[in-house]
Image 1 (spheres, rainbow, N blue to C red):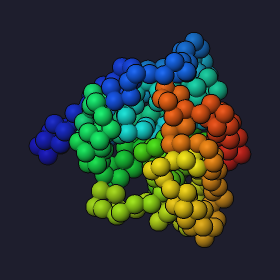
Image 2: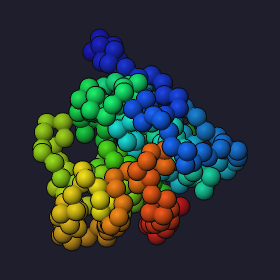
Image 3: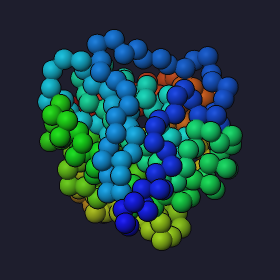
Image 4: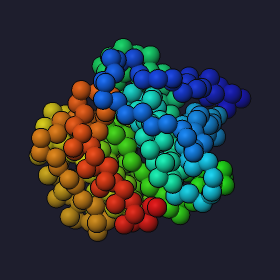
Length: 278
């Protein structure tokens, strides 16, 4: 009976098509990666209280692919996140992006960032996210195509913070790359810890990619994180692009910085290769 009641909270049963309403209009520079040579599309991930939708992309032939968890921005698993999964798949990865807000609401139909945060994102517990990512890893393993001995994670904005946390939480993660995820914050019952709190205890190496002109993540908090990482032995590093704003990888938005985005992507791929994800 309890399980049936909890299932009612599965608000989002399928992924959004296209881009989230809050990010319209889409920039002309947007990158579109085709599905030629890929298996790509929506799958369902069994979780404790039902199932959540996810976007999965992988090569159409072969198996035993290294696995990359792609963690969404606050806009959910919309077209940009799906495209990133296809970019990984073109390089031989099984990339999967679970819809981590599925129980709390459909952010794709909300018209502004403040509404997205207040109505949905602020209600998502870190414990739920960790559990759903575990379930996603299990799905990748059980699908018979993914090799979770080569597990990486990357995420953007909201997902960037999650990368740091999941790398500390899961012993399966070989390496992570966090794009401009918040590093410090107020502890709450839903978000008890921030990256700076767990930095000394990290086991897996995480590469942080941050913007020097990010108004939401001050440079002094980046430096605090660097110092905290020195207390541990995870080999994690942070790159600060001095002239980049928040969201510099988001090619569908005006914040996109082509040079820094391409450099960051090259660093990500090299980082994954260096630490056994690939």
